[in-house]
Image 1 (cartoon, each protein chain N blue to C red):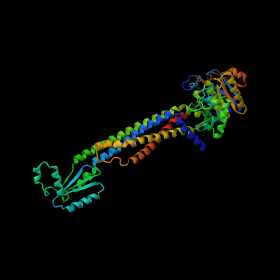
Image 2 (cartoon, rainbow over the protein chains, first blue to last red; image 1 turned 180 degrees about the vertical axis):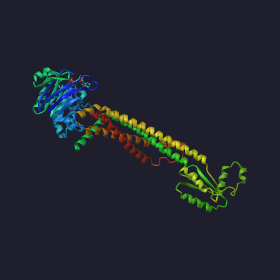
Image 3 (cartoon, chains in turn brown, purple; image 1 turned 90 degrees about the vertical axis):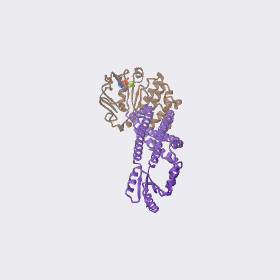
Image 4 (cartoon, chains in turn purple, green; image 1 turned 45 degrees about the horizontal axis):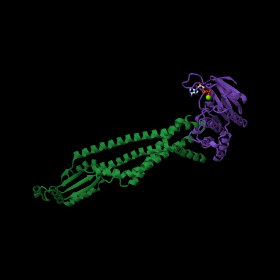
Length: 219
Length: 294
Ligand SMILES: Nc1ncnc2c1ncn2[C@@H]1O[C@H](COP(=O)(O)OP(=O)(O)O)[C@@H](O)[C@H]1O
Ligand SMILES: [Mg+2]
C-alpha cells in the first residue's frame, strides 16, 4: 500500500538530512506506529504521502502509484484517498467545527443528505456534539485536535495518517482516540500514527517503526 | 455538478458574510476608485464638448462685390449648406451690415454720417465643425468672380488648434495616469483580501479540494465586489452630474453638456462594472494561484 524507496530529504536552507535513505513497506490494513524524538523526521515522512513535500531523493509509492512523479491534477485524488490529522491541526479558521468536517465531505463528493447524517455522528464520536457551531479559535487545543481527527476520519479514507494525534490530549482522551483509530483500522483503513509517547505505544501494541535523526533504526 | 455549483455559490457568499468588515472595505475602496474614474470620464466628455464649442467659433467671412446679386449670393449659401463639414452659413445683406455697423458705433455720430448701404458689402459668415476645414473653405472663394475679399484669421485658427491639441493630449495623459493608479489600488485591495484567506486556501488543498472548487468562490467574490462598487459609484455620479454641469456652465454657457444624464450613468455603470469585474476576477484568479500550489 505504501512504499519508501531510498528516500532522503534535505529541506531548502537546512543543512541536516531530515530523512536519510529510508526504505519501508506498509501493507494494506496495517496499523503502524511511527516513533522517534521531536525532530526525528516523522512529520516529514508523513508529508510525502499527501505530497505536501517532495523527497530530495528516492521514490514514494502510494497504492501502486509514485507520489513523486504524480501530475498536479491527480494530487486532489491522492489527498482524498489519504486522510491526515495534522500535527498543527490545519483547521479552516473561518469555518465552524461542523463546517470543517462538512468541507472535506463535500470535496469527496458526498451528498448534502449524507453529510447531514455523518457530521453529527462524528462529532459525537469525538465528544464535541455541543461545539458544532463554534469556530476553531473558540476551542481548546485538545478540542481542536479532536476536530482534526473527526475531519480526517469523516470521508473514510483508505489510508489515515495521524501526526501526534494525542499530543494535546490527557490520558483518558488519548486512549479513546487510539481505540477509535484501532476501530477504523479494523474496518479496513491503513493507519500510520506518529508519536513520541512510548507509554501509549506500550499499552496498545502494534508494529513500531523507529526514526532517529532521520534514519530508520528499527522496525 | 449542480450540487457542486450550489456549493461554490454557498462559499462565495460565505466569504463575503464571514469576512463582512473586510468585504465592506473592499467594496468602498472600489466604489471610491470607480467614482474617480467615472468623474474623470465625465470631465473628459465635458471638456471635449467645450473644446468643440471653441473650435466652432472661428468663421470665414466672404465679402461680395457690389455686382453680385442677392440671388447669386443666396445660391452660393445654399450650395455651402449642402457641405457636411459646414455647421452654419449666415447671410448678411448690405442693409443688415449697415445696421450692425451702426449699432457697433452708436456713440460716434461722425462715423455714422457717411455710412450708407452702398458702402458696406454683403457677406456670408461660414462656420464649420472641424476647425481644420476652415482654410479649405477660405481657399474655395479665392478668385471667385463675385468675391471682393475672403476674411479669416489663420493665426487664431493655428493658435486654437495648437491649444486644443495640447489640451487633449494632457487629458489623455491624465486619464492614463489615473487609470494606472486606479488599477494599482484595485489590484492591491483585492489581492490583500485573498491573502487573508491564504492559510485557508492551503488547508482546503491539503484535504483534497480541486483547484476549481477553491478558486471559483474567490473569483465570484471579485466580480460581486466590482458590481457593488460600480453600483455605488454610479449612484454618486448621478448626483454629481448636475454639479459638474453647473461648474462648467460658469466657464461657458450655451453648451448642453449632458443632455441625458440617466443614459450616461447607465452606460458608465455597465462599462465600469464590466471592466472592473474583469480586473477583480483576474486579480483574484492570480492571487489564489500562489496558495493553490500547495
Ligand atoms: N519546512 C522545513 N524547512 C526546513 N527544515 C525543516 C522543515 N520542516 C522540518 N525541518 C527539519 O527537518 C527535521 C525533521 O523534522 P520533522 O519531520 O518535523 O520531525 P518530527 O515530526 O519527527 O518532529 C528537523 O530537523 C526539522 O528542523
Ligand atoms: Mg512532527
